[in-house]
Image 1 (cartoon, helix red, strand yellow):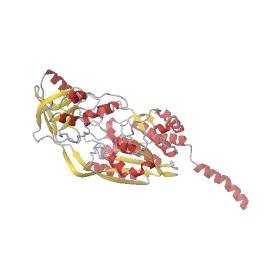
Image 2 (cartoon, rainbow, N blue to C red):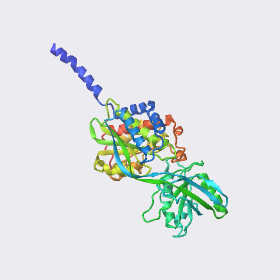
Image 3 (spheres, rainbow, N blue to C red):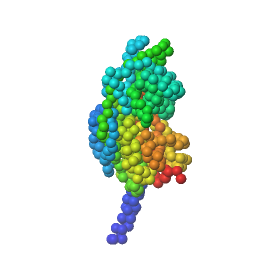
Image 4 (tube, rainbow, N blue to C red):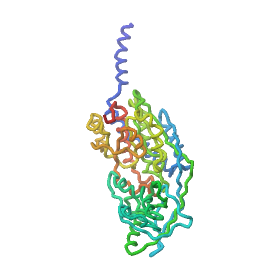
Length: 458
């Protein structure tokens, strides 16, 4: 009787063992991608964030509400650990802002202060403009050449699918105010770093240089930059500018972190992130509510698997990307575990479809890259053989510490029509495209976490 019972139990044990054995990684990646295509969570999350919180300027009460929202949402998604990590910052808060041409043809101008800009005097600034059609022309101006003038740069940003035109034009906004100040300017205006033709200016942060005077700085809408070009071609132009932002010292923001522990090598981490903060003009739907929704949904899908991947998947919602504070804060706090983070990437390019994934050079042409390419093909994406230059602003500090990064390229042809404007709202998001992006992120993340690949260059 005992022998018969043992014989009966042997095939049952074998069946149970087979049922518990990991499925092939590519099969699991394809399965989770299909689940992501059917899952409405990503759109539901960005709808909730933009409706129930709205704009989320770092260091403000709205930022704190967003953190509570994130903790509640992630806490209900089955993660093993959800916590916040605080860091200090000086909050910058927008105030009244206006500008107008006072001569030769009085008219209003549509503009918005750059993040971090100092204020004008309460009465504003009135001065003649010095207009430059390219940033190089401004840099070529001699010291003192702009004394008492408002410098205006009207160089256009180039529209390309991968968004490279933004990086090329970024110094105009970042460094332009200090460069103008070094030459004597009393204020700085630039054509918005945007590719639209709407009368909606694009904000964004500036970076004042050490030792240079800090002057008020703002971005003009593209049509208003065109108007100043036409007026300047006819003769001298005088502009009155009023900016009234303020700062709040000793503010704080938070990175929100959640983890789905790996089943075999939980000490090894695949980190995917997005930034929770936004500018204050719109509701931060594409920048970066969509990214928050993508990585949170991917984490939820992985956390809910009956058999999780080998490595831990860590979700980080960064609290102050727009003001350049959360990435350095996270990198400094986690410098000691850089060796444990086997791969990192950040979703911060809107809600359109992912068309390409760029992997670290260590795995170029590897079986891992081939398996990922096969998984992505049915989703309409491919593995680009080029190495990524970066994986996102908030993980740049980790990258400098040696963490390998991947870049998931989304269709950004119209991203900079909306980016950093009052038009960054939920209606710009197509739920089907967002689901496809989530599916690609899910397949990529699962495959990286299930593998034993070393993504570091030898």
